[in-house]
Length: 582
Ligand code: ADP
Ligand code: MG
Picture 1 (cartoon, protein in one colour):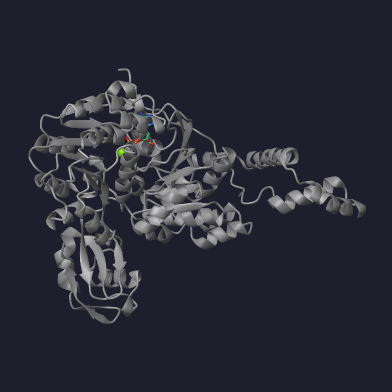
Picture 2 (picture 1 turned 180 degrees about the horizontal axis):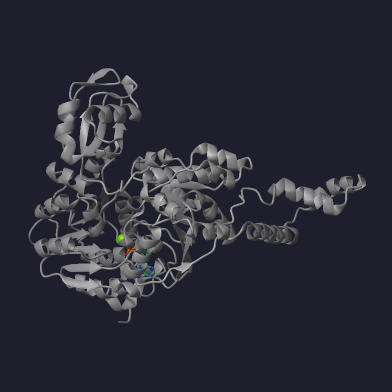
């Protein structure tokens, strides 16, 4: 099917103009197919991979439908994360740039109720939100449903993965029966079909075949590397390909934090994004990445889900994703808008089986790549230096100011070659700085005869290296020495977080101790873990206020935990612990 141009879609002049301002010319396949059907008022079940323009596919017809003269909430968009909610609203605002009087409100957990109450009171025509907070406002009746005519579920698969099924159903049950329901998802599943069957009215299925979209504009490589060599491998690839903006995916939050530390330690502008971070922090990090002030964004799948940043040169799969589906989502963040992107996947131990699953699933062939050797990086540095100096010599206007310095050095009988070399050394440091002596090709050969290592490597999920190993390397320590020392199983166990991202449904507890009691996150995690036997990592967000705190724990444990913790002590202080009222 040929993709329609936006003029051919029968849109209003206002929207056509806004879309043209965004530089969109042709609609994407999902847009071409879904927009006309949605505009007819039909329910749509839309399936297309990340990065295919689903937001506009439902957003444009929604904006055409909404009546700006009626100051009532007419549409609700549900999506899995706060980032996504904000992104969808922003995208809607761009499309509706020439539609005055349209109000869009975003509601999500972890954000002040005050703003949300205030904005909802004004009856915004469109509300975009995450399931938990939407239910909250429905129960408080601060979100009015009477005039809602359109309900959209975006990233439905991810909402289900995150355990929002009940919430989604609750929301849908609370909506007027007479409505248009649009369900969008990157993948199909029996759960999605069952939701569609129950809550949609004869939906038209619009499905864009995966292979049409597995971007041919992404060059995909994998590299067999040992866990503890991934950072070095990554840094070499960054330099070799001169990458400017990168997204790096890890499977756990702990790995995100650790990698960010490693990269920062090497002077790379890296920041992390994961679910444990405060909303304000996440927003800030995203802003810095979008404006390229942060070069490397390290994220977990869930935190990065749906996030759209243009100009990403490469996606690194620092860890092979647990689910083949995620691979496709991850790499879809690069190679957008016809630009070439690259994806690099680090494979260690049994990961290679997962890699085969991915290839089967996505019907692609991931090429094996080689990590550039130390000398190639040094050559690259030399090359860059020549380019930089040439450019500066030709283009910089105020070189004369150094004439005097040059004359003095020459007067002291220092050769011009020596002067230059000294300057380079001052500017660059050692040409081989930050490069270890790992020979990846050698290493691989050795490894393939040592399958035991590979298996062990994987059993514990994430490996980590302790900080002192790092320091060793910085001070010229060799990997050889590290090998001798071996990698303690303890080190591994400590970080064997598994699937931490797939959180169950969470409940917020009210805890009557706060800042004034000098309570820290660690105190709360410590008390909960030791007294209830739950694992620290099962505890979700902790918000410590002046006089009390909120602690998120898995909903199914809530009552039990309250029974144990209520009137128990936290940091020596007796606390009441209750399920926080909605
Ligand atoms: P999805 O929700 O399917 O992951 P998005 O809606 O986030 O995808 O769109 C991905 C990117 O493509 C966004 O930057 C969006 O602005 C851009 N985009 C969407 N539609 C078009 C189009 N028709 N032409 C050019 N770019 C588009
Ligand atoms: Mg999307």
